[in-house]
Length: 263
Ligand code: GTP
Image 1 (cartoon, rainbow, N blue to C red):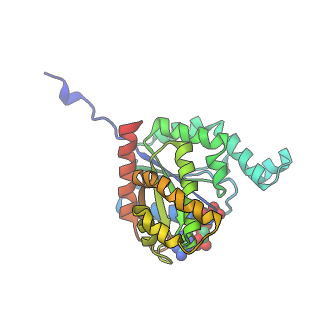
Image 2: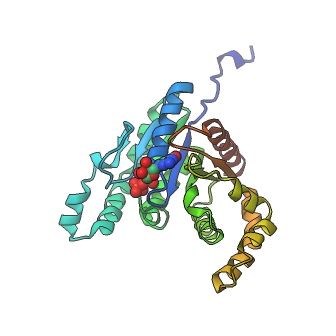
Image 3: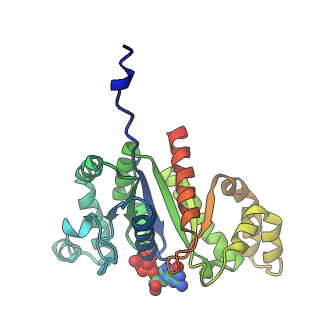
């Protein structure tokens, strides 16, 4: 016999979805929505909370940084302010992150591992702990980064541009497939953003009336970013109404395929 009948099918690894975004963009609310969506239409995900300072987590995380480090104690013990306290808590947690990976790997029959990050985006994207945690996930599982955009707050061309520059910097730092999730589409649709990303002349028209230095910089940058936009997947979602969930998971699947073919 060829022995093929005995061969075990290769176990499909779950996809890690790292949720990042500026404070108040809706990371926690969206994660709660993704969690309940998967409970309804798919397999329950494994959920990791990496925000040490959050007081209320509306979803039941399987792994919670707050079970390991007490951020208020860390502040007291090291004489730190709130941001230093969060940063140091994340660094302390990162030293034991191999245990988190082991736990995730021990779970069978998982499709997704959803990860909520600290409110201050730079703590995750610019700290040693953020890099360690991202690399630990990305070397064990297909990993995609979801950058949440507060859609109603970026309808002006200049705030949109500064938001996109933040997204570019995340792409540079993590080098992982990046998905832009335009959240809060129940308040403002993200059509304007898609139009500006697909056609930089439309963006230039929108900024035409502004003759400031920043506006002229934005005019030049939109051509540079054209290439960046082509590599991205963008979806409009509402953590409130649940709009855009199927499109969100299609984008995540696309990101996982990109990971498989690149990393
Ligand atoms: P930090 O913990 O500060 O980082 O915030 P966060 O990014 O986790 O945002 P959070 O989920 O706390 O949401 C911020 C605010 O936006 C809250 O008042 C939410 O109710 C609101 N919000 C989140 N998602 C949506 C949405 O899809 N639509 C609307 N209208 N509001 C939303």
